Image 1 (cartoon, chains in turn orange, blue):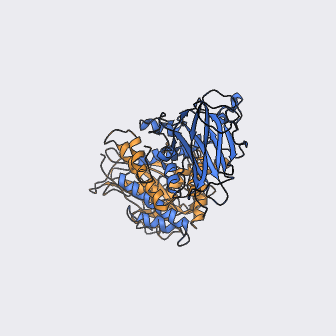
Image 2 (spheres, chains in turn orange, green):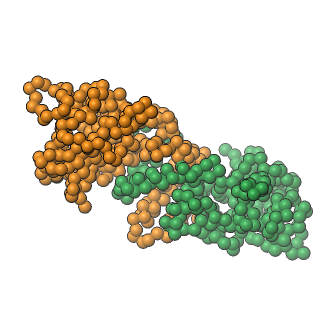
Image 3 (spheres, chains in turn cyan, purple):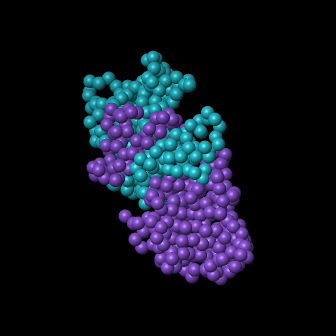
Length: 286
Length: 286
């Protein structure tokens, strides 16, 4: 390895890892080393730029906590997270989208027609739809886990210091015998991803904003099916065409409609003044 | 941007950065985004692997301090640092090699023939040579900044807790009218890079050791010339062919020779029992 030069070093580094022939680790490492080295040669990276990259990663590490994961945020704004979601979407199933940083296990369970809004400010939104398999058969007993921001664009978990309950605006629903679900909540508003750290510096350097289009988060699970993690967006709302984390897909945009007196609506605890419909499609496991 | 898919997302992310046309930042960002996305598609990265990468970076951030920079270490073991050194070596000049984490500004100045060893354990090594330009002309007044491990493979800066002076085994020398330099020190021994963190986990996963071949560090500067950062290695010593950070180059290996009574040596404060010769070549600035 004493005769390495800028072209042969890539093979030398690959060979230095003695991983199992044909293993996934070997494949992941070798492709990564190739891309890292190709990038370095392609852009003719200087020492100052190299140190700039390493100090950027160092700064991302310093600002990160279990609640503020700057590397996930970096992945989000580079479309890395969205691309992984896209690659792992099964044909025929609802498209995946960002999990985001605010998911909590053990959200409270609600009966169908229940209300997540608890009288908060904002339009009362009826969300309804069906969970189906790829052949169109309804899936009874599917579990819909949802969480969202409020009408100010804030998640209650971010406002615990001012007395909010971190489990607010979260709920778990189970589909009925026809695979149907329905509930009410407040219409969420857009918010910014955190931009007071190194990722914010990157956005400013690239003249990019930090806004996300307003959305509802979902994880939908059913026995025998592959769980999906996705988001639901609303037509003609702000940032729908330039979401900071590339979460929007055409298939995930629903239409907000005002509730009219003549509408036939499912029974809800609270009367809605807007409504939207979205059906989830699950692909079989394995 | 609502119609993005796993192929069009790369262009969408590139377009989202509104950087100056033709700027270096635009070039660096766009090439990085392309390689990151190509990698993700090529290996068909799963969500678990994606999260594994992000948690690895998170862990690197958590263990890092101003003295322990895990991202530089990661760069080192992936040959990224060495590749940047290679790319930035000027034709005709001495090849560059790792700066490493232990450099300090303001090392003590010594007269030629001075001794860095201060009676420490180990062989007393005479290091001598000349600093020249690419045409072979000697460079008088060139400044040689050197630092190294001791005969146990330890840098005094790592042993401050046990009373060692962090400036020990460091020195700055100035070449004479013929561009010559010479000094004595102790022969350094191999040591491991830190392997108690995430990078150590990576090395173990790849069945790699953490040893560096023994070496002397140098930064050589002269007015009107481009400074070089490099390392000097010794023929037939351990790890010379599998240095953990890919620092060794054939042109940076010198021969250790025992001192014989018949040798004509330059005047030194301490009598050496081994010697080596290395000439540095600097390329013009700009």
